[in-house]
Length: 88
Image (cartoon, rainbow, N blue to C red):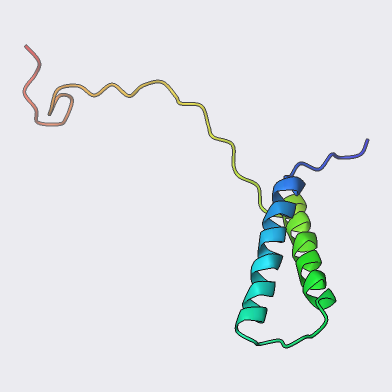
């Protein structure tokens, strides 16, 4: 039986889209990459989406929160410690 993959590819795609857009705008605004054809910026955005999807599928998972155990009961101060007076 095939093992099902658990991840968040849609959240990864959205995050990758934002990553690609921000990298493209950074390159455009600061003129680090002067390209007259906007297809290259679309390629950067597409690569960001692909990276986001892969990160959503194969990236680290959050650990499940453990259910709370029984409450810890704390006695009066000093009770049960060695040298403490016996309870009355």
